[in-house]
Length: 139
Image (cartoon, rainbow, N blue to C red; front, side):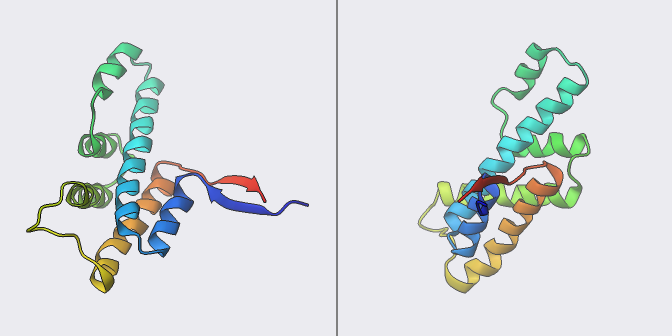
């Protein structure tokens, strides 16, 4: 019998980045996946309400992570604490992507204390609130 592995989908990638203390990847990838799956959750919500596809496309066109978090909060997919977590992740992602010499991201133990909880919360939100599943593959 083939051995099953949990190494596909976004969650294992995020966990590996977290476990390797690769904070750039952990935070940026968390933001990307929250945006992706949040978008899909909102789209699914509107489709369930039978909103016209063109209207859905207009609402979701060029939507960014903070707007997605606001919609998710409004439709009850996340709570206010999770909304704040997504805002923090967005801020940290922006710090990583748009660095200034005066504002460097943290490294070492300080980074572990700052970024690890955010990565853990992102994984939890994706799994519990946005229904991201791990995909099984055989090894």
